[in-house]
Length: 120
Image (cartoon, rainbow, N blue to C red; front, side, top):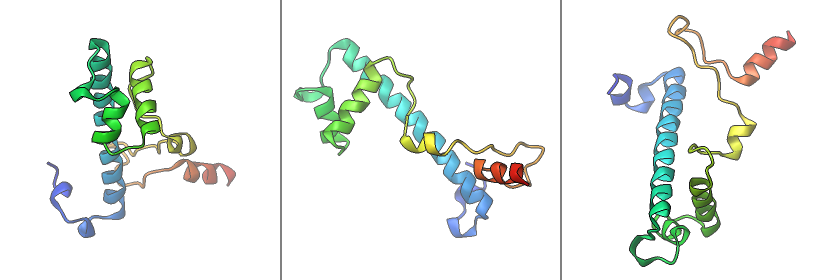
């Protein structure tokens, strides 16, 4: 656990809060990919958990999601799609360029920042 992970959020700088969001999203993406792998494996084995009529029905009930979303997730898992989340927001807002060790004191540059720099 890093030093900033144990601090209350109100004590973190804006940069540390932004980095915290990126770190949490990265962890979430990894967990999502692991979930898709488990769905794919259960499908490959022909298993439907605990007597549910389908994997999508199981996911909708257990993960408290809409049946359409559950079907889309199962389709992504078993359809050979890359095992990473694909959110519409990812297409609208590309991943910001993270600061490197060398420029760790400089702010995180977003696509909007880079676009503004190019116009100058």
